[in-house]
Every structure is written in C-alpha cells, then in structure tokens.
Image 1 (cartoon, one colour):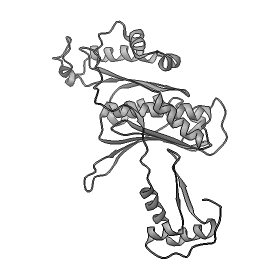
Image 2 (image 1 turned 180 degrees about the horizontal axis):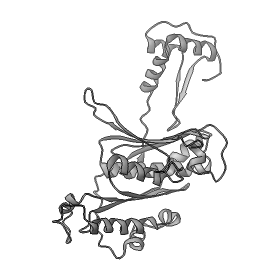
Image 3 (image 1 turned 90 degrees about the vertical axis):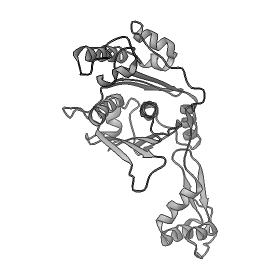
Image 4 (image 1 turned 30 degrees about the vertical axis):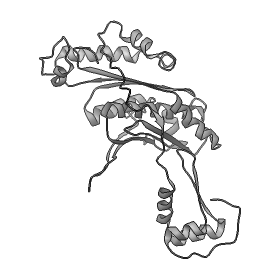
Length: 320
C-alpha cells in the first residue's frame, strides 16, 4: 500500500512453478516457440496477480484466442495459487512474433477472464468478462498488459497499470491499482483519509505512481529481487509492505485433470463413436493439455463407462 493514498500494488515472480509448466510441455515433445512461451508466461503471472488481488474462492481462468497461428492460450490460477497453463499452436510463426501476429491477425482476437466458483451454489453460473485485443480506436494492441488494463477499466471501473515479463526461468508481473477515495480511510494513512470524493490530488497520486511503475524494464522485473525493484521505483514514496502469512499457500503447479473426468468426456462422445475408435485403434487414449498425463481406456474400461457390453476389437498397437 502507498500510505495515505488510494493506491495499492502487487508484485509476483514465479520461478519453480513456471519452470515446471515448461518442463511438462517439453517432456510431451512439443516445447513452445519462444514468442508463445513468453506470452504464456505473462498470462500466468497476470492470472496470479489478479487472483491475489480479488481473493476469489475458485478458479480464475485467463484466455486469449483469435485467428493467428496460435489458436488459444489459457492460464488458470486457483485460490490456493495452484497454477497451470497451456497453448495451442496451429501454424508457423516468426521468431519475434508479437501479440497481434500470434492471435489477432484480422483484429478479431479476444481476451476472456472467467471466475469459476469452487463451491458453486444451485443455479449459480460462472462469471465471464470479454474484451477485444484492440484499443479505443480499434488499433491492435501489442502488449497483454495493455489488454488487461483496458479490461479492468471497462469491467471493474478501476484504473490499473500492469507490467509483465517472462523468459524460460521466471514469469513476473507488477500491478498498480487505484482505489476509490471513499475507501481511503481504511488505509489508516497520514494523508487525506477524510476525503470522500474523487479529487484531483488523488488522481495525481495514482498517475505519478503508475508512471513510475511503467518505467520498469523487462530485465529488471525478471532479474532483480523485490526489495531492489520497489526501492528503484518508489524510493520517494511511503510504502507499507505486508509480511507473508506463513500458513498461506505458495504458488505451485496443480492440474485438475483425472481419470474420472476423462471418462465423463468419453461418455459424452456416445457409445457408437467410442466403439468405432476401439474397433480402429484398439484403445482410447487422451492426454491432458496442461500436465501431459495420459489416460488409456481399453474395451473393458469403456464397457464400464457405458455399463454395456461392447465387443472387443482386434488387437492393435495404434493409439488415439
């Protein structure tokens, strides 16, 4: 918090969990091209930032999709900071491809943020907000941070500044957000706690801090420790930092896939379709796009799924 000002910040740097996400993809034999890796890393950092900011009991799912050589990118952050991510690459891309050339060739790309409650009540639906990958004048945006800042202004009516970066070792992000003046008294600061209107001084406070945050360079965000980053940016500001609660969960890799879920998906294909796959390939094999886990179902397993006798096909070494 910035003492006495309606401005707060969050800084995240993910190392082990991000390396684990990339490792699983590499072991599956489909390592991400560098531009996809970096964009997906920024999304993972952004998902962690937003989950920590709203403290939502459930999954926050960030998706970017469009008509480029990358069909879809997904990053998910659970309330316990279990993280996972994946991307679907369907075409060739340049080594220095940016956001628009990856997913927004014809300016129809979109970014969606979904909140999926963990303990959903009867009739309760997930919340989803969607924003285009373009600016106020329909210009293509080249930074994920610009897209998310626009989303926060449109969906949450909150002025937000975000700096994101990723490489093959870490994914990091800095979020600066302006709070409503009416909540300034809750900050217990020494400044204008009694002010309850959106005054000019408060706006100038946010603009100054946001400008300082925006000066943060990619290499600094990825390579410097937290104390150094905050000292370089805000050495003239009165920062109030909060010590981590030792019982709070740390960011970690977590995938919700299971054999039971895959079985339900197979049932959704219908008995006739699955019987055809068995007859052709000998088994049904499904690999999780997030963690790489493979689930195999033979004719006996499928019979259990549909609770019916399916004729076992001829033996085959082929896989689906």
